[in-house]
Length: 267
Image (tube, rainbow, N blue to C red; front, side):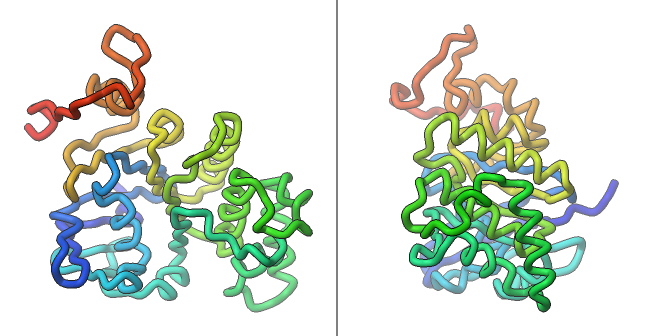
């Protein structure tokens, strides 16, 4: 069995040396695979990504226990700049484009580690071939793009760094269904090109459709894990994340008043 690209082993994370955000998280991301993190708000999903990308210190956070490994090498204390150099690129939640710059200028910033302008141009053309819409928008000011266009731009900017692992936090948040489909089609294409993916997502079906493995987080702990097929077949996941009851009837997540984790999840 090949060594995982990323492995968290019993990781605990503290913010301001007071708030315990992650409580013994253990998970893996396979090389060339797609892993999805699901769970309610405040479950620790975004913190898990920041733990891997080295961004905890920006918010006065630190790993207080456990280890993070990349291909077997301890990267627990490695900072964000070095993790980018290692091929880990983190697209944070909130569509943080450089609003007063053009779309193409945003992309060029993403390729800041490339030494030669010729290499930057090669990567630009590659991004435009993957995301033709960005070629059409390249001279538009990023702040005036739609939410979906900004998300495409952020993925394109991440691709300029030539990532081995692309981590993306809530890519579909606030987007129309057609744009959600376009975003996940793009992510599936990147996976086919060999980019490993770690996705935090509330749109569980879209994420599980392209994933090979998933983890459910709650209160800073992994409460359920399995293959994407296993999770989609699980009645709890169907009811609380896919909006489907065992009968096959669609159910609105907002109508569920009491989230009750069945005992078998933990046993």
